[in-house]
Amino acid sequence: MKKFKTNIFSILGTTIFSMLFFGLTGCVKQEASKAENVKSPLATTSISNAEITAAQKIIEKMPNAAKGYNKLAVAYIRRARETGDFSLNDNAQTALDRALEIEPRNYDTQKLKTALLLTFHRFAEALEVGKKLQEVNPRDAFIYGVLTDANIELGNYKEAVEAVQKMVDTRPNMESYARVAHVRSLHGDSDGAIEAYSLAARVADPMDKEAQSWCLTFLGNEFFKVGRFEEAEKHYDEALKTLPDYHLALAGKGHARAAAGDYENAVKFFTQTQTRVPTTEVVIALGDVYAKTGNAEKAAEQYKLAEFIEQKLGNLDQRRLALLWADQDTKLDEALAIATREHAARKDIYTADIYAWCLYKKGDFAAAKTAIGEAMRLKTKDALFFYHAGMIEKGLGNKKAAADFLQKALKTNPSFDLLQAEKAKTALQELN
Image (cartoon, rainbow, N blue to C red):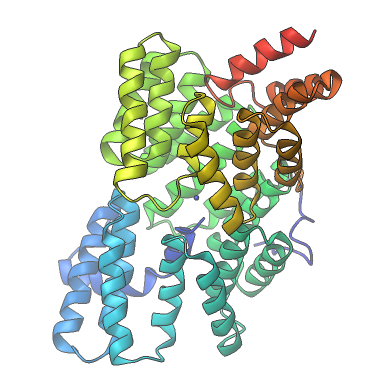
């Protein structure tokens, strides 16, 4: 297997947290299989349920050892990832708290703790704990995954590149290649990202169907981002063949069908996804399809549901809600308040983009231009960034710059957003 060279950007032809847990499940699979008398299980739900049972049996035998509680935490995390029931992460946290009561200095428990800190969006804490664990074991690839993810979310991209390079040098496997792909994508290297995601999919554990499907789905997402819709859908189909009803791949299919103008099937796939895992992103996407096809009542229901998920269920990241309100020219003060708060806490490019869009919608074009410049500092190939930049320049009266950005957005991905892409076309016509 070809190993990455000195620079992770050198081989040519990035809300990655779940990747942390793929590498932790192998240690419990064998015991889980014995506990359930299952030979080579293919369904990930069977694996995770068996892991929970196996961990509970270990705890029964050794209630005063951290080992069983660590395995139980891993099993709950895996189950949460499979089902979308993220409340199971609270069960994992309870198990880890018990493990730390028993063995406060247990290294594996502390590793799992950093992963949960990322899941709970406590990025600064995860980074701090990760650095301490790095001092304990500087050859642990898992810790470099934590450092990569935390730095990306905080906008520390130079440090993220350094961490992922150490990770892939230490252990060139699916988890490290997937992070290489994400970092390349952030830096505008779509071909390199596609190559790395493809490699991650090839080296994924053949027994871990979710890991394979995850890689194939994100490979499809990378194709979709640059407007290569047929190739994207091919990989979504492959992911669903590997793991039927995989919610991330179903969402991908919904976007692919919408991009092709097949709104009937887009509704079908988004509805299936929402039934399994009702994320804000998917709920809004389904609302957009209804809006696109003239069903204003059903669209409004979906948008209302999105608000409920974000506001009433204690969602940890309300940036998507701010973007929704800005797109719809409603509750703009509240949208800007969310974006301002998030931007103060984390300096990643996606937060900067939403902050810029909210400023634009409030008419503060100069501040919006500064923020969108911050969002585009890595030269990421994101059509939404280019669209926002174009509209901001239009607001400032810079017609040529506005037209250039809007054309770039539509060239990069003509279906970057089902509704906003149409507004980009209209704005471009007004400039000509």
